Structure formats: structure tokens, C-alpha cells
Image 1: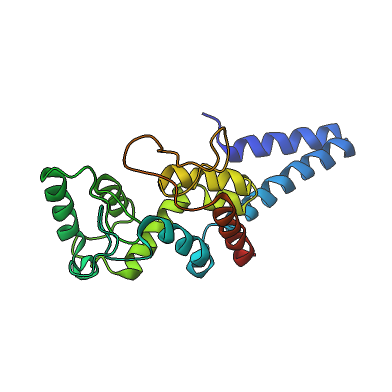
Image 2 (image 1 turned 30 degrees about the vertical axis):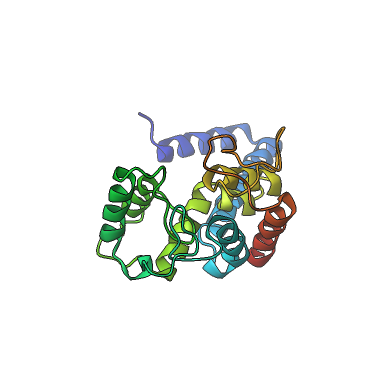
Length: 214
């Protein structure tokens, strides 16, 4: 297979033979575009966690009333301290909660269900001995937002409405924003979920996130 280095040398020799300034200019322009794209991607590889504050609060308001110790059917929980548990303990609790006949095992400020928590722990290389505290829950929520396109939104690859609609697929308390039922939850009709945040609230939070990054 021809390597990039060999290909580059052949193209360079061909340009010299042609001695065509127009071709050279076009070639340089294409290279500049590649460099600009690479630079743009590098600029949004990391986003300061503080920029997510408005989004985190809005999502939490809908999902758990902002309670880091909330769980399905008990958003006001104060007796069961998930914030003192390890990831391993939380996963074990979630498994038992569903086995006891409950329809969901969503826990924490962002109501993360067991399969999602397991996938995040694997993706982020988080040990099961890590404590499911406030800081870790925020980190997990941000990872979910990244999955749903937060970096693409900052890079102008998604509109505010598209990003908000993506978030609605992750968090049932958020509205669809787009489509035929913009004010309803993406999961409306399942008997468990409904939107608790308005279209205006989530789109405003999305725009505040973008402004905080810039």
C-alpha cells in the first residue's frame, strides 16, 4: 500500500513538472483547509466543566429536583445516601431494586440507569471503588452530553435545537424541542416519563453553555 510520504513526494514532483502556479495555489489552499479543520477539532477536544453549569442544573431540575441522592419514585430521598456509596454498591443496589419489581433503577441527580452507568464506568475507566459523589455524578452527566454532541454543537456541527433534541433522547424529563411533539418527552407514552422542562428553558440553557465556552 502506498504510504502518505510516498504519495506526497510523487504529488510534489508532479507539481514541479507542471510548473503551474494555479495548481500549486489550489494545492496549498487544500492543505490550509486541512490544517484549519484539524486546529478547529483540537480547540474543542476539552471543554471546561464550568461551562456546563447551566445545562447540568436544567437537566437536574427536570430529572431529580436537583437531588444527588434521588432515585426512581423518590426524588426527595434524604435517607439513602448514594453520594456515600461506591460505584459498585450503586450498581448492586440498582440490580436489586429492579429485581424487587420496580420499573426503573435510575439514580442520582441525573437519574442514570444501570446499563448506562456500567457503560460510562467502562468508557471512562472509573474503578468500581470510586465514590458516587456529587463531583463524579456531574462528570458522568457531562460524558453523556458529549455522547449527545456537546462538542459538535460548539464546533458548529449541530444547531442549538438539534443538540437540545439529542439531549431529550438521553433525559426523559427534557422536551423533544423539534419534530411534531416539541413540548413532549421523547419517551412520552411509556407510562413512566414526561417532560418537566419547557422548550424555552432547555434551549436557553444550551445557548448559555455555548456562550460560556466562547
